Amino acid sequence: MKLINIGFGSLLAASRVLAIMDPDSAPIKRVVQEAKERSMLIDASYGRKTKSVILMDTDHVILSAMTPDVLNARWNGKDSDTAGEVAE
Image (cartoon, rainbow, N blue to C red):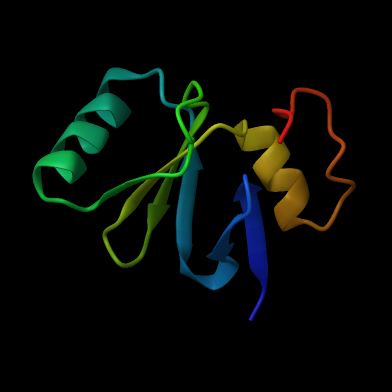
């Protein structure tokens, strides 16, 4: 099972990820609000600004302080010292 580091020591099973989205659009903000109301929201940003929203096949929605580009690079096994990464 491949795990993806989403920041601050938090890991996700890569096979369970459906999408990694930018949090700024209105439809994604609604998805986050609905997940919060259903108690399916996991905030893994540790108080930092949310830079990506991860949709899981379990219906969970996860917030991360890493950008979608950084998470994509980590998913593909590229160097994690990508520009724009939040210092951990």
